[in-house]
Image (cartoon, rainbow, N blue to C red):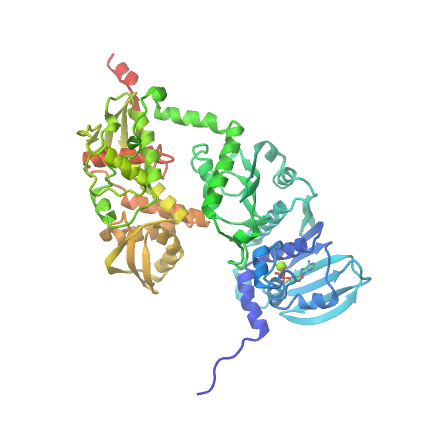
Amino acid sequence: MADIIQLLPDHVANQIAAGEVVQRPASVVKELLENAIDAGATSIKLIIKDAGKTLIQVIDNGKGMSVTDARLSFERHATSKIKSADDLFQLHTKGFRGEALASIAAIAHVELKTKQEQDDVGTTIVIEGSEITSQEVVVTPKGTSVSVKNLFYNIPARRNFLKSNAVELRHVIDEFHRVALAHCDINFMMYNNGSESFNLPASNYRQRIVNIFGNKTNEKLVPVNEDTEVLKISGFVGKPEFAKKTRGEQYFFVNDRFIKSAYLNHAIASAFDGLLKTGTHASYFLNLTVDPQTIDINIHPTKTEIKFDDEHTLYALLRSAVKHSLGQFNIAPVLDFERDSSLDTPYDFNQKNTSAPSIEVNRSFNPFKEEQSSRAGTSSTKQVTFKKESASNWESLYIGLESGSENEPSDFSEVQFESEETTASMFDNENDVEQVHTTYQLHNKYIVSTIKSGMLVLDQHRAHQRVLYEDFLKNMTIKETVSQQLLFPLQLHFSVQEIQILTQLKEDLEHTGFVFSNVTEESVEITGVPVSVPESEVSIILEQLISDVENEVPDAHFSAMDLLAKSMAKSLAIKTGQSLQKDEQEHLVNKLFACKEPNVSPTNKTTFITMSVDELDKRFI
Ligand code: ADP
Ligand code: MG
């Protein structure tokens, strides 16, 4: 049989590579601006026509290229920035893959003009669909100008796929902002269809932000600065009261490179916890400087995703730095205070006798029988810290009742624990006396409980939704999860479109505990499910999820996770009408108050109300 394998011609290979590097005009803008920065330019001009569909030109005053380099720059894997794979771990430049110019030249008409300082004349090269059509000597100032015309002229499908000019221009401007924010020491200009859109002089960071986002931004900025051995953080966060409904102004830069990280974004969101109105998002402009050896930028062709060696530490540092700044600027305490008062936290907390550590852990975690038994076989999870907090917070509500929280149920048989500490305290209390229950269920719908100031009534369905939602979100974010193996794989059938949605969500679903062993065009095979999910519910949950996603297309990775967590919480939460055992009731109450936002359900509905003795007294007058 004849040999059938052949090498792809260069221009085809370049077109394929272009598919990864160049999705839209904004991608070209990013690559060209980055090349100009790498060339040491102090002034960079971006010229756009028709949102970049007709023309994208970047002119810089950087170091330029020699005649040979000018030609070589369009070769694939041609780069002056790294020489060996080792250099990848010491990157100080934006580019290094050596494929941007080659890719762009494969799918557009490109004209390059460049001159080095010491040369009298420069070089101009015209290249169309990877073919050099002319190379000449030219009189041009020091630096480089790259014009990219008629993007995707030879790939009609891609060209038709481009969005309206308004949308594409928005992307171009976003990209311009990102680059300009990462390099406030460089003068950037942008012209759109012949008129000036931005002129950003070299300045300090605050000034750069204000120049881009307008004078009003100035008063909104709270500086964040932290200098540790592993990480340097500098920049600003927006004051909570100016938080926006959209996620627009959220910028992370790592070693001067804009990156997207849902994980680090979560660190900031959690630093703002309780300070933001629900549904609003904090702005931030933060620069992280880390040792280049501890990150891997190479994982994504557009270089916007980075892998950190030690994400957990970064998370913690970032969160505490932002918290600290918010606190210093007197933002956090005020609002914290308001928030706590709604829970009526007793102020005699300090006078309370020091209690044994056991009190901090509610060993009665009795998460609804099935959940518990299914967990019995799994190894430790990292939830205890969470729970500890919970119990202690909640405990404070009980202060004043003689024995409330001190009496722990004695059934330890199925309790999962992870730390030595927990284990020790468990045994200390093994002989605890009988339980005193402080909750009642009303109409299989509400749970009533006594608290120091009076009473509390919570909606079991909404409260449980909140608990599950935060659990899922946390698992997805920290990517630590426990899943239960199914004895027999579960085969579920869906439409092609539904499978597409599931595939998009697959990774996040896996972080909740799902294990997909096989995904075909019309079915999925599942071999593991989250511990809290009974096997019989799996198909209902996934169906619900798909319909939720269809109705609300998530715009960013993070909101996809959010949607997923909401949807699963909704499906799995205890329903109204379900009768709960005493310990289940208590467990729910404890878990709710361990939540970051116990007051509302994930869909923003009230989860509990309180009524003080005073209010009751008034009723009896
Ligand atoms: P990379 O940036 O990953 O090296 P590119 O394809 O973007 O790959 O560029 C290839 C090479 O062309 C660069 O390594 C650099 O040497 C040269 N180059 C590109 N743009 C410029 C510029 N504006 N000024 C000077 N040299 C440039
Ligand atoms: Mg480059």
